Image (cartoon, rainbow, N blue to C red; front, side, top):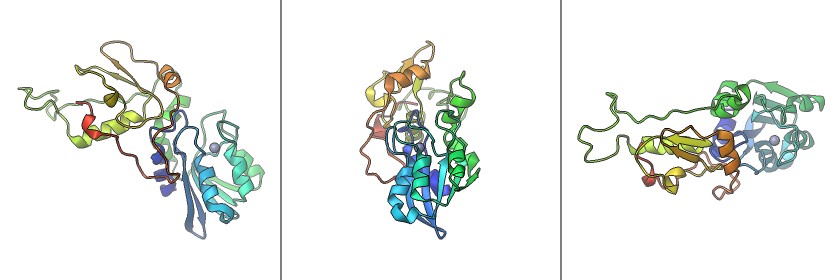
Length: 253
Ligand SMILES: [Zn+2]
């Protein structure tokens, strides 16, 4: 399951409004195939892993970070694909909070497949925190606060020179990784918004950047305005993590 969770993170910033999901097919204690949900509209992790496993999936175990879907969405139900592949046992980290997609566990069990739920549940919830929050507290947005402050609580060097940077390249890189996982960005600082700063990290939803004192943009609006994009070229293999297009264009915080 640890490997499946690692694979899931390859979809960071690419899968909204879907969650990130990873899957591995295990046979005789060995991982024989892997898959992830690379971006919105792409095949789901289970289907990718099962396709990679081929006939070897028959009688094997499937580890997946989220309950396989039981509905026809952008792709056919994964539960049906698992049943058709002849998988004997399915281990699921977390059940799907989305009432539209849930029901995979029941469907798999009805087909005679042994299903276990809960292995890696905490890590699965943590890595898809915004996704789970959307169903648990739909009336409130999931907010990440980013502050650039010095260790003594200041927001700038006393002489404002020689550099505007209060943070280092590592933190700026991390900031852009985190930003890519959000649907909207509200910021208050005296720097122009440029396309590079708005999306230096590839993201599936066009993050809306709002400056000043105004109300933060509604994340659902931003989601609808953004929608899925093709994202970066994907080889079909789940890389562990992406990289920012140009870390040098990071914003000042
Ligand atoms: Zn699915």
